Image (cartoon, rainbow, N blue to C red; front, side, top):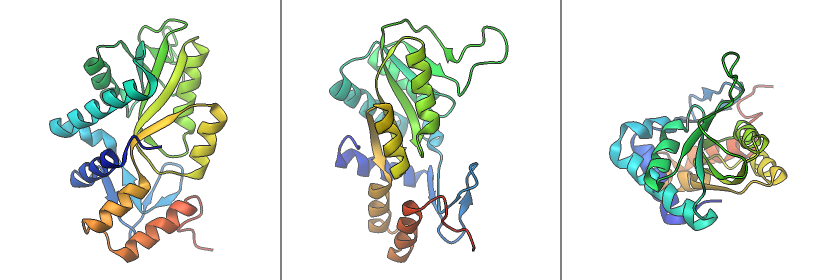
Length: 215
């Protein structure tokens, strides 16, 4: 679920401008999962552009409070959302923690880095949602620590059905600044892609796990 349409369009345009999102239907990328994809998203690039990172920080902060009330703690999902999560926490005047994919193998073997108490209300910040699996592992780690997860916010989501199902099963509310549909609409309007390429990108989103596989 996006916060609102104006924010979704503005965010998509900013991500396209700085090549944080690259669209290449003719020469698809290969994700770590092995999926072939005509789109690649690296939202960490936003941290290198002060005006854009400030826009994201302020939109997150405003809408977190609107949707969830002011939490006790902001948590970032490592590694992609540590930077923007910390900016949001600073802007809101809140403590910050980040969540590793798994506990460290040495030292105190922490999975959550920072000071988090049982019963505290937490909003989790993520940079990108694909299937949602890694994001929800972070949510579970926070719950296992005895804190309450009010919800998750992310810069961008591909809008896969599997992600929607995963968040629904986990009873976690997800809000994003932008999503795949808004991105495609804007990319065609601003001539980043042709209507034919838009059709290819829509086909991919309907079956990303099998798209581009020759049989």
